[in-house]
Each structure stands twice: as structure tokens, then as C-alpha cells.
Length: 165
Image (tube, rainbow, N blue to C red; front, side, top):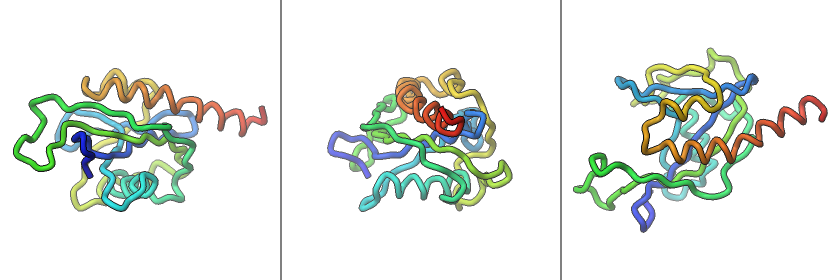
């Protein structure tokens, strides 16, 4: 779904394990790494898209995760001119994303990148929370930094709750 300004509505997923490492996935056939993300369909709420994308991209069901929080508003990035498909209607100039931070409650073996008919990733790994800023493509870096900064307190909050603070 593309809004009137040309931004595709999307969810971004920061999946954290119990050591606060984040799932970092490599796009199929590329050396491009990113967080799982995906478009929001018409008549679909962001939370519904989140659950669908979890399944399609990394093979997880809702019982494998706990939603800790989300960004309050939309975060946007523009696509580089070379990536804009000018012949398509409506024209998409970038992404308008709502980001979620999740706690992974399953086992690493539960992650399955091949559940979808068209897998997006061919490899994944756990990395330090801020590591993605060093590897993500430059046009997404600012949105990643905003999302990580806004969502980091949710991790600290859940750590404090589990430790009894």
C-alpha cells in the first residue's frame, strides 16, 4: 500500500534474543544485510502485518515472540533515484515504517528462512544491538538509528522487570 506522498507502508522488525542480540539477515544472493521488514496490505493493521511478515520472512509464529514495543510514529526513508521504478503506478519513492521490537522466546532452530514461496533471506545471525548501523545500506541508516534509539528503552524496561528492579 502506497500513501499519497509515495511512501510504501511497511513494518520493521527488531528481534532480540535473551542476550539482547538482534537477528540480522542477509538478502538472498546479495551481501546486503537488514532487519526483517515488509509491506502493510490494504485493510491490514501494522500488528497484523508484523505477524504475517514474521512468518513469511523468518518462519516464526506469534508464540515464538513477545512484542515489547513499537515506534510511536512512522519513520521514513527515500529510495535512491536509481532504485525508483518510474514506470509503476502509483510511484513509490520510499518506505514509511512502523518499527517493532520483539523478544524471541523460541529456539534458534525455530527460525526458518524458507517458509515463504519467495524467501527473502539466505542466512541470519545474532549481532550486537547497534551493529546493524555499520552494515545496513546507507539510505536506510538514519531510520535504523532512529528505530534502535527509540526502541532500546523497551529492552531495558523488560530487563528491569525480570530482575525485580
